[in-house]
Length: 196
Image 1 (cartoon, rainbow, N blue to C red):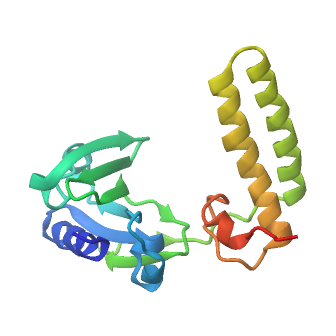
Image 2 (cartoon, one colour):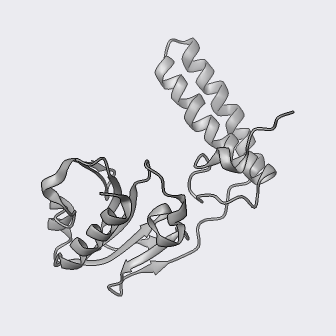
Image 3 (tube, rainbow, N blue to C red):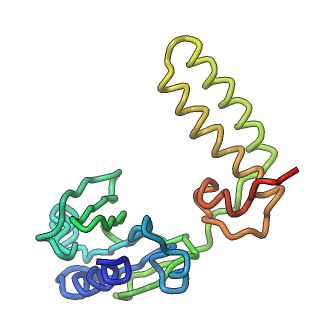
């Protein structure tokens, strides 16, 4: 099943599940960004639940479609989850009582009247991001030198790199398309290598 069909099946399943009020998809899952989809794209969604069924649906995730083809599901954080089907399609989702959606790259598939939207938080100051990059780099190197190679590697390659990517995006490619919450996404397209 391709991503378009998986999104359609999620839409149908949510519409047919009592207690599901709203469904919003994000990023390349939204039809307006379908041109960005590739074989590695996943379904990104929020599934909002009615208070009287929220606990049960949060526990069972019965709104997930094609359950006979699910290979695995796993919880992530308070409201998050992931699903993997036997055809390789993946979904990352939040499911629970409604919260404010701040992602502007979205499409509403079901609107139960409980949706609230707001702008994303302002981008962090790029000067602060350079400072964070330098300090996280020092912390990471310190951890590696004391023998904590895994923790140090994560600090350098995740936290320090994320701060640096945010600063570079804002300084060198402020108009490039981006996800407001993750400066590492599509960084290569925003800052292509220079052949100098």
